[in-house]
Length: 75
Image (cartoon, rainbow, N blue to C red; front, side):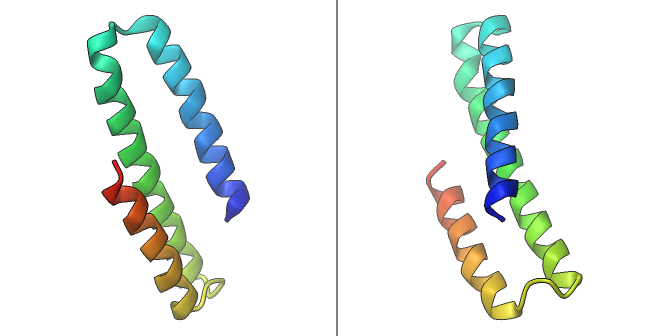
């Protein structure tokens, strides 16, 4: 899970860097919010995929979902 999160963060950072070079300053915050929302959605989908494949017990799923819920509230 940590490697998945790290890869999403690295991808998101690379996209932000490209966007900051191409987009005017007033749209950067919108792009950041959109990318953060997409990352959170991807994390939720991956957690459900792992759980559906039997790789993640319900108890652990709920624990990890709380972390994702917290991240979502911070955006």
